[in-house]
Image (tube, rainbow over all chains, first blue to last red; front, side, top):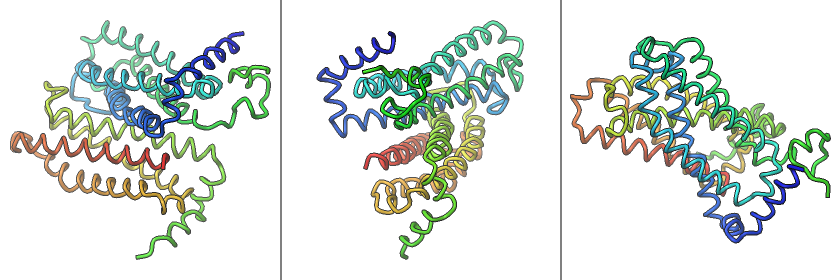
Length: 186
Length: 159
């Protein structure tokens, strides 16, 4: 049911003029894609340094809260660029993407990473004054930082794999995988 | 010097064989780790350069930022080169005839020389001893050169 609705929505998007225009334009599509990828340096680059600081692996002599606070803004600017270009990439190839198992895993990882980030931020703010000048953050925050690195590595990998159609609906797939990928009976 | 035989050999080497034969290994160990390393490399470049430009972390000494970021720059560079060589080996003959591959290699060479011969020696000491305009010029040049490496790299796949 949900897969049928998602596909209908994707088909409606696909039929719009903007979607066709982006996918059919070599430079427009590829520059949106390149921007999406290159902004990894800004968005995830800042995120990596925040997490490494929490783990005691970068700038251990500088207040951890200060690092998180100062790098948060450039990270969010990068995130907004990645979000917008990501939406446009989806808009250009909605029917292919909605049935990509990698895209679906990526969305789940993004949600988990978001929840992890919110919890991390809350815990950090609540306890910061007691440890911010120590080389490593407390254990729970270190776990959260390591989880963040792992989740975002997963987001990068599944994002890259969207380009591959190894498990697309026109392949022979086990039923569970077909359902997970969003395949719909004709 | 004729390079084509080297590229032909690379494709038949063990690395080339693995990448060519196993698409999943190419996409995960090659492309995905290459991109994860890009996050760390780009982060270390931008953290330093934006600090030198006075955009971020103005209340953290720029020497500390530059030293710590350089440590991670070297680590990520090692990973990005290793995964890059692995990927190039698998499609070596196509790379030989791809203009953007050579554009990227040129930009990369400039980037590596720039970092180890100019940027790092300059930032090693006390930044107050360096002219402020020179620090800013180095930061802008650094951002431009690494952006070029990433952009031409992405364009290899489009051309």
